[in-house]
Image (tube, rainbow, N blue to C red; front, side, top):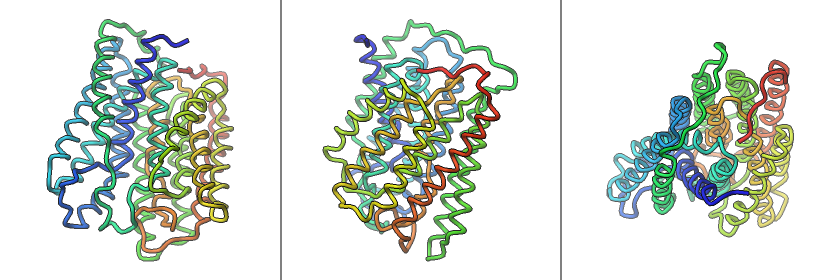
Amino acid sequence: MPKIGDGLDVVTAFAGAAAAGMSLFLPFSFGDDSSIDSPYRVTSLINSVPRAAALGLIVAVVVAVLARPITRPGLIWLTATGGAAALAINYLIGEAMTSADVLTTQNYIDSLCGGVLFGALCICAWRMRWSAVGFGLGVLVVFVYGEVVSVFNSNDSATADKVVHTPFWLVGSAVVLLAVNTVRHRHGIMLPAVPRMAADLPIAPIIATTVLSLSLLIATEWLGREFDGRRGNSWQIALAVIVTLVAAFVAAALLPGRDGTGVLIAVSIAAAADALGDAPSLGWHLVLVLVLGVVAILAGLRWATPWGVLLGAAAICGFAIVAEHLPWAFVWTAGVVLLTCVAGFGIGSIRVSYLPSAIPALGALYLPSILWSIPTGQRHWPTGDTAVADQVPGQVALAITVGAAAGLAVLYQIRPTGQPRAAQP
């Protein structure tokens, strides 16, 4: 049973992961008094969102690799506190400004600080069961929110202003809780990192994350340009799918042992989630996400099976294909439930032998998906001038999921079970 200290760790990990996830996954918010007098500035902000997410994730894994050998947890908690404090300062500056001239720059700073928080906090939280549950729940809530809630109210970038507002109470709470945990753990000692084989380079997660992030970013932006002006076609989508699958498998193969399993299932879950439509707000479904998320993560910790996660991702893809023929209220609720259960179970199923390998597995949920670049009538994202058929995103996501399953089968063949088993939080 969890103790009082475990409860504080859970709440801290949840708040920190949610604050870091919002900085990575969502555009930087700006004050109500800001003057957005040029659609170009908002368009620049929109374009910087996937780039900042990729950059922030690379920073997160670098911080995690550097923090892993440290045996004093207080120093790692202090690093996470510093990242959260920088997030809060950047947020306050953005709220105080009345011009959007540096909006894109602040979005990059937001993601960099979020990356520091994400990487350091993951090293602190993922090594213990209950704090891992809190951290995973924070990742899950932000992921579901960013996937099923309309970040922008319109596909017209000129009207996409004053829509996203990062709650300052969340960032402020994360700073306070992290500071308290830094004091709590200041005298703690952690076991040193397990000696590794020479072939298992500590920088392998950095290389894997860089390959995955840049490949998905390039494929997403290229496909977005192809769809701009009604030029996109099925061959270009197929090429982007191939790039996605190759990048995911290479990143998975670069990680030691079977740590890359989490990357493959995360890429498939992200694609499946992007196949769903948007809604104005999460509303009371937030309570549903929290409850189901905890249950799903605990189930994943108890009965981890990546094949079950991929099967769930395929179910989401099939649901997205037939969703247009179903009542919207049912589609919305069922989509949230499906996505929460599958993503939560996938987060709980992550097993890594080298702790920083959890960063690309969890952070891949926040990376850009090629489905961002496929404009549909149900997806409010200003990427193209015309919408494809509503079944296309589900079909593309299903192709990615099937490809990820094939990549997982190959990974299991080249990484036999005789190697040391991956650790559970």
